[in-house]
Every structure is written in C-alpha cells, then in structure tokens.
Image (cartoon, rainbow, N blue to C red; front, side, top):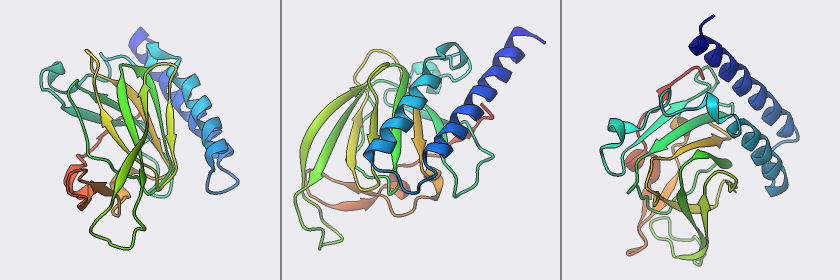
Length: 208
C-alpha cells in the first residue's frame, strides 16, 4: 500500500468513526446546546488529525487566486437526506456572507485558517415573513482550538479575514442541499431572502 493510499484509508476510517460517535451522541433526538458541545468536542478530535486533511488533498478554489471563492467537499456523500452531513470547506480570504440561519443544527471546527463569525439575535417578533430586524450579539473567530455551534434558528454571518484559505469542518443535521427554507437577511434593508437558492453552490463529493 502506498503512503497516499494509506492516508486515504486512515482518513476514511477516522471520518467513519467520528460520524458513528456523533450519531450516538444524537441518539436522544434533537440536540440542545449541551449535546452540540459534545458533538463539537468529537469533531475537534477529528480536526486534530490535520495530516489527514491537507490542502494538497482538499485544495482551495482557483489555487487561492480568486478573492472570496469557496469549495465545499462532502466527506460522507453516501449519507441519506435524513442523515448528518460532514463537509470540509476551503474558503479564500475576502469571503463574506449575509446573516443566515441553517434550519438544522450546525457545528464548525477548524483544521486551518481563521473565519470570523458574527452571531445575531432577532429583535422583531417574526410576524412579517419578508422582513427581519437583527442586532449583533457576539463575534467568534473560528480557528484551530476555537469552534462554534448553532441551533436551527440561530443566525450568523461569516467573514474570512485571515491571510490564508480556511480548511474547516462544517457538520449539519441534514445535507445543506436538502435545506430549502433557510433565510438570509439584508442588514441594511431587513429584507429576507431564500439563502440556499441565492447563495448555495454545489458540493464536491469526496469519500473522505
């Protein structure tokens, strides 16, 4: 077995084991923040095996040349639409998003690179489906050793502010491609948009 094939086999096993542990942690049903904290710790263990998740195997878009471009690698493409979905995201510096939710829980853990997350709270009553009012609650820079997790209705925006592309795990309760009701919010106007339709690009399927 070559070194490359050995690393691939180890990576596949590590991903499989991590997702099995995550599913066990979720066995009680929809997670609360305490459960998500445990899921985060398990994903951080996977991220610690950084030699299995290199930029050589998961390169940034356009070799890092296009400002703000991103590539999302699906690490368990064999998973069903009702299963957890693990991605490895590589995003070039300069990327920014409008505030948005996920409609499912989410955990973000860094292998390499910095991503500023701004977390918001809604200040309106949600009665107008076309408008929302937000205020910023906190900022978290996701980097190795500093992770973040979200419940389905949590709202955040991302801003890649470092000097190198990110390489971050994004773990969701369902595949992003199946989430049709996510919202994004224009901070200036308060307009609500469909986030997946307007902002989501296709993932690249990679069997770890």
